[in-house]
Amino acid sequence: MNWSAMFFVNSILFGVGLAMDAFSVSIANGLNEPRMRKEKMIKVAGVFAAFQGLMPIAGWVIVTAGVQYFKVLEKAIPWIAFILLALIGGKMIVEGIKNDMDEVVEVGKMALFVQGIATSIDALSVGLTTMGYRFEQAFVNALIISIVTFIICVFGLKVGKKFGMIFASKATVLGGMILIFIGLEVFVKGVIL
Image 1 (cartoon, rainbow, N blue to C red):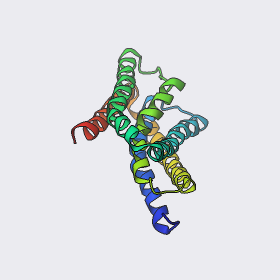
Image 2: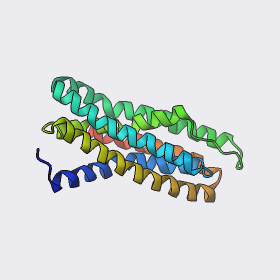
Image 3: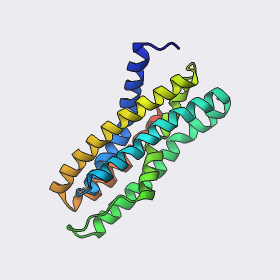
Image 4: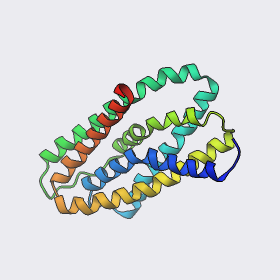
């Protein structure tokens, strides 16, 4: 693969496509924590961006090291994403139902870490499409995906915060439902389709 305008366009498109789950989860996080400060928004978006950038590199390494191992892992991806997102979404729904309207449930570090993994695990498959890249191209591709994800997630957090202020106590329940829906979507696309 040569460095070309098409390489950069494809990398940006990969970034947009892969960031959609992280975008939805960012909206859920903003709904869940409508008073989230800018510093935390940057950290949250940074976690999603880091995972979205690391997973394609990991996929590229796995594919270049041995495609047969990746095929086994690829079948587990929808299951892992669904289980992780369903657990976090279910927890958010329970917390949203239990808590008073004025009480805000903050997105914790562990929940954010699990969300990062769950929303980016499908990015491992990008390794299949970048198999012909040299390492530096795979790295630049992952960097572009990461930057695009960061921008999209900051926007998602802002949208979620805005609506979280409007919907108050129902926002956490809605955020949990969004996470479960994303998990189901990943599962259906990966297993059934």
